[in-house]
Length: 157
Image (cartoon, rainbow, N blue to C red; front, side):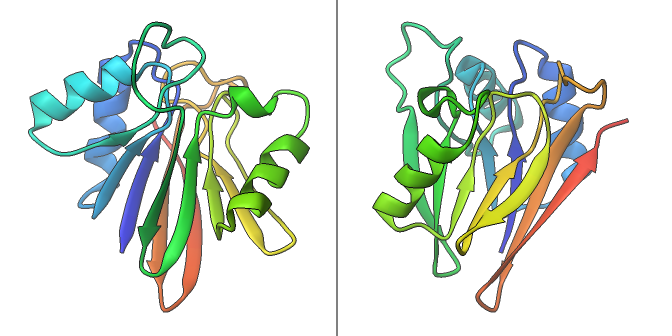
């Protein structure tokens, strides 16, 4: 199974669409918030389902801030990350992931792409498709195959 992940588009529909086009065919497409209305618009324009959560800039939205999905037998926690103070450290996010018993966490909010593992839980931040902190727009492609979760952060040129 192949998962495409974007985050923090902040109204840049063109950046998000370029990422989606570049990632090719995916089984799941995920937007991790800021703005969830971008995900709604892209879903309508591209006529495809997008799983999304709201971020800190999605005030007034009734979209969930957290979701858990199962892909290829793996439980994956989706969150923007702001509720877990990810700009400061990852302990709150780690404790939540441990509490709900997931294999991986997909989060955004920092506008910085990274992948790390803590005590068997994989953490993946695809960065931002519009306002990256390091100047490099990125998105994620994750493969779940044979019980393995293989993340790939891709630069969007």
